[in-house]
Amino acid sequence: MAEIKHSFTKTSELDLIVTWAAVANADTFKAIDVGKYKNASYQIKGTFGGTTVAIQGSNDDTTFATLVKDGTGAATATAADLFDVTAKPKSIKPLMTGGAASSITVVALFRL
Image (cartoon, rainbow, N blue to C red; front, top):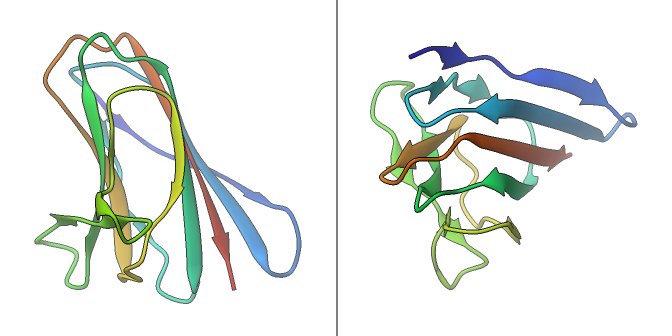
């Protein structure tokens, strides 16, 4: 079990892409501080094997809760998906539960 760190790609003065790549079922995602960004979308892809991936947020970097997807419900995916979230927390991190995922990648686009 490993904590998977993210990579950053700055695409413009306003955009930041954060990627957690090739995360396996027993791994965890390292949280990132995104407090200054106002908009966020998440692309989740890979081999799910029954795994659920949730996008979680926190304002205190201790207690994380699942965010809301497009204003329609929990920000979770059980297959490849791309969605926006409504909340703008200080920190975010994905969370994988259940199943036997062999390789999940989460790509987040943050925009000022």
